[in-house]
Amino acid sequence: MAPQIAWIGLGNMGRGMCRNLVEKGGLDKPLILYNRTRKRADDLSAELGADKAKAVASVADAVKNVDIIFMCLGKDDSVNQTVDTILENDVTGKLIVDSSTIHPDTSNDLEKRITVKGAGFVAMPVFGAPAMADAGQLICVCAGMASSVEKVKPYTKGVIGRAMVDFSDQPAGKSSLLKIIGNTFVLNMVEVLSEGHVLAEKTGLGNDNLHQFIETMFPGPYAAYSNRMLAGDYYQREEPLFHIDLALKDSNHAITLAERSECSVPALRAAREHLEQVKDHLGDKGDIPSIYGAVRKESGLKFENKH
Image (cartoon, rainbow, N blue to C red; front, top):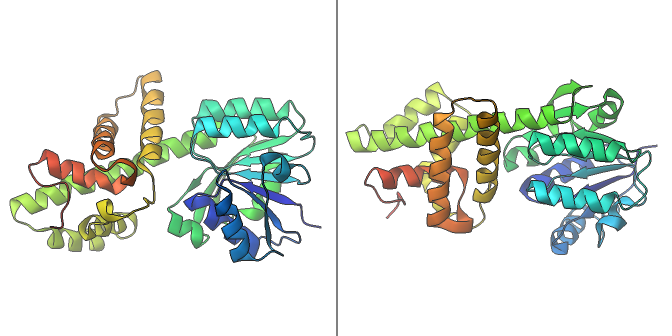
């Protein structure tokens, strides 16, 4: 008999992960859904079908009769507050899996707080954009006691992800540390692409010529972000794929870790400065590739590339 599973947090990533969990996870009971904005849970339940997913009104309702609780939330405070509520209930024998991107210290603290209550804990941040979540192509990074990680494995590769990085019997914070450092690769990639496109435009090479090189030399994420920049998606999208506040949170976590470890991260600092400029210019519409607009503006061009 498959375990009863609950999912807390239905942002862009969470919704796609839930769809794949229902479709490919071998569940024999409805997936329990909770989101602070109830409509998102109701809408996803209606989309998946009442026999596949059930929306509930509170965290307590989500966790009381389940075996595994997945969370995918935006910020450390939200994760801590949700876990506080979960731990008001009897969690003995349950497993809590956190797919949020949070500071490794937060993950390590969660592991202590949860295991002392008799539950298992796995930190399982994921790498990939919302489209990869929809396609079940995420990379899952699992850290925690090996016995707990084993319970999560059936829902990683081939279900919500295409691969799993196994940090069994390592502190939960190790997976969060990899996630934070890994996200700096994305920020630095977008920074380099932005500078390259502005340089190509102002020197006369032309953005299309540079993009042709990027597609040939660096297919995949580089080409995808380059496309979003040239199409104007970086400022025209009403709902960002990666909200500017989350990008700032991740960059701040990374810089805090660098300062603690006495590491030099000048590229990351430049990216964070541009993210702050994006926040000022676009507000809640800001996204990671919006860095392109900030670099354009610093270089004497308009923030927006389409007129």
